[in-house]
Image 1 (tube, helix red, strand yellow):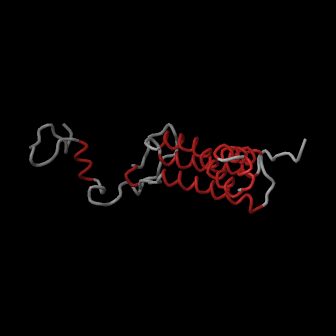
Image 2 (cartoon, rainbow, N blue to C red; image 1 turned 135 degrees about the horizontal axis):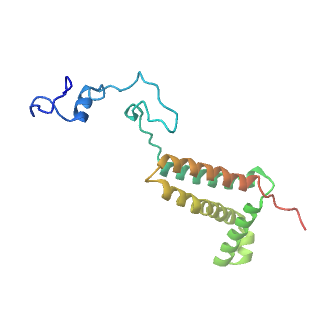
Image 3 (cartoon, rainbow, N blue to C red; image 1 turned 90 degrees about the vertical axis):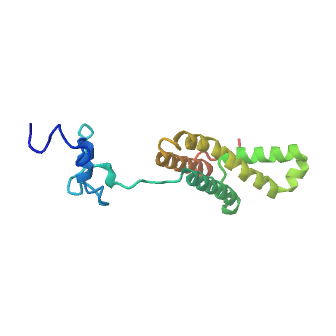
Length: 174
């Protein structure tokens, strides 16, 4: 038998399990961080040389990312009439749908005379249209990889804002 390792140990004195012995000897059990002296491995085929216990947990709230992105879309949609930018197809289609909803609830002349209500309905429709894929992304990643879900919701927010402000400008006429 090798020196220092024996099959016959007293149960009360020292643990026989290799995990228990290594855990007792590590600095993690004493409140420190283990393996600071070892370089992390970056090769995909190689086993890691540094434990992940020294790496802090990343807690990115996906619900906060979703709410923040929806707020950014709502504020951006509300600022389009103030900015006087050239409208895109997305903005015109959502605006026309908002006018149609208001005209359906009241009348067409009422919707024509109350442009503020049409713009408010358009902002709410923009948030709704943005939220359909964003909630699907959030729901798909919130349990398995929440940080990836937050990043993807942010990417979708940037794409939606690009569609809202830059991509597919509406034509000036036929």
